[in-house]
Amino acid sequence: MTINNHRIYFRYMAKIAINIKTDKEIKKNAQNIAEELGISLSDVLNASLRNFIRTREIKFSAIPQVIPEFEKFLGNIEEDIKNKKNLSPAFGSVKEAKKYLDSL
Image (cartoon, rainbow, N blue to C red):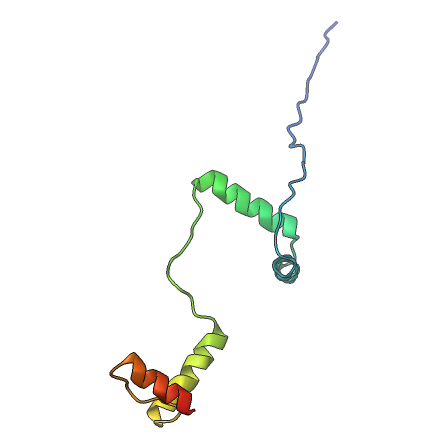
């Protein structure tokens, strides 16, 4: 008589909740983008945490990234400079600048 004892082990990860504080608008925007991608905000945060664990790094950038609204604003300024419009004169002193501003 042969008896086969088979043991099956299941590996699973217990889920826990992490509470974080963020601005309401940030959460709303992140949820909307995640939804557009067909994933949950929880999936986004888990992917970020997994990447942090794998690479042991968080990337911050001191390089400014110009948003489209600011690019448009700069474009308007460049157009004004080109047309010599909405410009103040050059000042040789603070006193001259104050005098000009008071005259407006």
